Image (cartoon, rainbow, N blue to C red; front, side, top):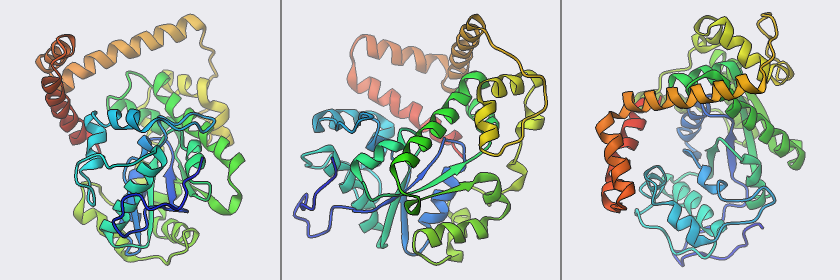
Length: 332
């Protein structure tokens, strides 16, 4: 179901974005770097993580009830979206999910005073076509072995065996999207080319979006914690992964890596049995528990568990806010 042209709030502004753009790809693929650059363009606004637009949408396009969407914003990482520029921290009076996500994009656009608006989406981005049939897409793909290694480094996974699943899921979502969206409304860029030649890549992306390149896109490094593109981040997996980890990643993703143009290591191909898969997933969970204690501290984790068990909502929300703040301090 796509959105119609109704005004959503009577605020005198166009609250339907007919053809937004989306930067899509697995997390740790360079999506944030590209988003920051685009958001510093004088005519382009690009919202950060916009997964909430599709997380509750079904693969066949069924939209969630607006009450379910409203309840989901009790989570701190989603409440951030309501306290962003152009929003007042209160869930708006929208009738449908489509109205809400359009409201959010329009508020971001209007707050920036720019012409074009888009956002980053890391998962299920093929579902965006159910909301915005005329949307445009910029897919950034990075070597899945570097994505998996980086996700473990961020403590999001306990090992590369599970971490590379996210890259595979994102690439599968892109394949589905390509089957739905005509070639003129989608483009793909390579992270490795992007960090080696950012000006050229940005010029191509701007042309795709119908805008001219602007040097102001590089101003992001003066206003954020993100550094300038660094080609040293290319193929970090080669010297920062054990041979066993490389074999595990290539066992699961070797065919897709090769199809995306990434050369395999040349190490012997291994097979992973069902028992080994279960052991690796169990080890991932154990390592993630250890990582959580290291990151948040045991007292905070125990307090959150107690607050949930006793259904002390305010305490649990306060703890969640503290944990969310810790998470944000690691993101770069």
